[in-house]
Length: 257
Image (cartoon, rainbow, N blue to C red; front, side, top):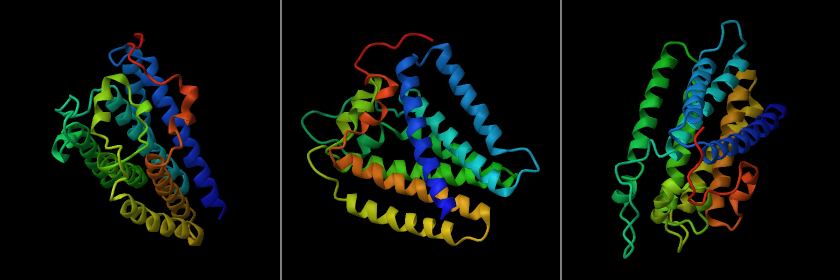
């Protein structure tokens, strides 16, 4: 139980802190600036180092570092997306006189998902070569949760956090349906919830420390995924969690850095 609680606390802290730092970077630096490019390079190097830790470390530590590697790679992709570098071929608002089709909405993020697929493939190959598998599993889980969130945003999310979307991507909000709750919302929650429960139970019952840590971290990610689904349909005001990252972007151009 201690491992589960520690893992959950660590994941919540990492989620809150990493999301805020990503928003801060997007609001602080222009995508074409040296500061932004340097941040991307630093994240890539850090992710690679974490995925292939030094020999001699115990398995539980390797699992933790692998998880951080997957999270770092995900953060790198988030920065590339929010900077507008990896989105999709469609970069215009949805038609104002009708709801966008799924194909139109998918075209706004298809390049991003192609890049995510390529990254996952590279992680799989590195795992076969001896890198920590937790980097792959955490990355795949984050990707899967994002796909489910995007589908629900398209089908119906009355309280989608549009304030977190930077001005350069504001057109994406026109593909969010906000007049109803997604008909797939209950199915989505009921898909994630059993997986979270199974993972947490496995963490509590595992006799191997590395297995307990891995299950705790993945279970906590799944639980956060459920929480974020509810953020889409309940008037919580998710952006309040990251006020320290600066005011929501308005339309001004970030300074070069």
